Length: 127
Image (cartoon, rainbow, N blue to C red; front, side, top):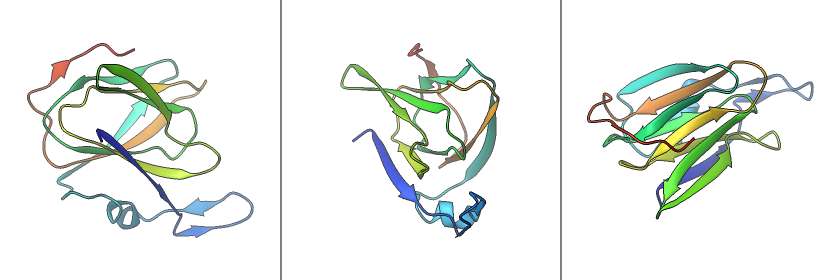
């Protein structure tokens, strides 16, 4: 499969909605050696990505409103990156066309983990 999704639990949570997730707990759910970590800031109505490349990436979205868009076997698919209160980590295989779109009315952060530097990027319009 080109995209895998794993639900992860906060390291600590209160009924009030406050939660803490240790970064090393996120990394334990990633099936590759993380060599690069980035925080991406996506304004409302904006897409990041729209490309493919040979590196493996894993994305974590702490808030609702981001949508992962990817192409699998010629079909464009869309997944909410956080829904029903679940925290998830999404892993994108090498050379899978993908983008992340902010459907919300506020800027949102996306945390990206990768197995190496960004290189050999091919632009592809998904959104």
